[in-house]
Amino acid sequence: MTGSGKGARRRLRATVPLGAYAALVCVFLLSPLVIAVALSFSSGEQLAFPPPGFSLRWYREALATEQFLTGVWVSTVIALATGAVSALGGTGAAIAINHFRFRGRALVQSFVLLPLSIPGVVVGLGILFALGMLGMKSGIAAAIAGHSVLGVPYVTYLVLATLSNYDLTLEQASLNLGAGRWLTFRRITLPLIAPGILAGAICAFLISFDNVALSIFLTRGDTLPLRLMQHIQFYANPGVAAVSSLLVAASLVVMLVLGRILRRRQIVGLAG
Image 1 (cartoon, rainbow, N blue to C red):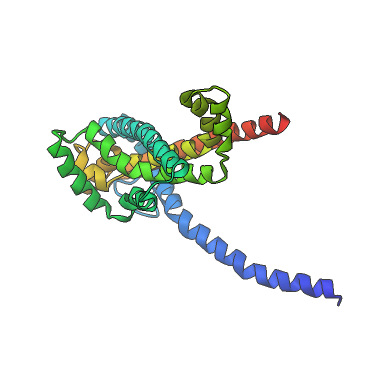
Image 2: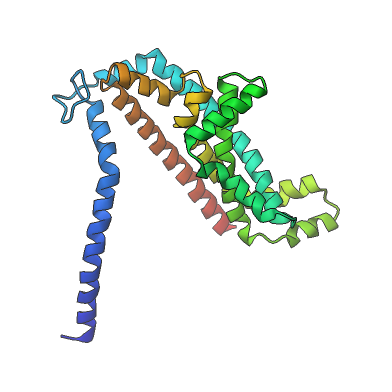
């Protein structure tokens, strides 16, 4: 047997355990999703796996349940506003940390990340008392403010990652040629850091949409995750699985659309 044949066999023996491990990880991660989708088609009255039969009944009931529809609306409004607020705050923080050198810069950078290292219950309780001192009550505005505390760090560090290869001389050249700071930011800085801002805003949206720990303190129990928890507590029927499956389908559609948009931009960029 030639040396190349022995090397190929050794590589094959090395990749088989790695492939098996990767397959087990995929099964571990995807099995809850598969079970939830299977339960959404159950014809039974309770959450039981395997389902006794298959039916679309729970999808019809989920789409006709006012509590679920209201929860989706409230969660979407909060998540969209959180993504916008986090994008503004996180982008400003990232530019300040990256562009300027000041005393305590490393401390500020660590402080921005601090909310992610504290348990959500503690953060929610602290924000609840802080908003109470400002005269704000539980509701959509309080939830947006609280969720943005978690969204800003994600946007900040994703924008900082985008700025890691950023050339500051581009801004200096623009300013020397007579452009103001706002025009320089809009024409030069923003297009270059837009991928980081978009990624951070999407992360903030997702974190806000399915947040439970903060929503318990800051909302009136009308977000979709809390409505689902209430439904499981009192009814525990497959309607919850139907709502979850619809959310998964919506997420896949959004991912496919964003993937196509980014692919087209890459193709246009390469052609240019």
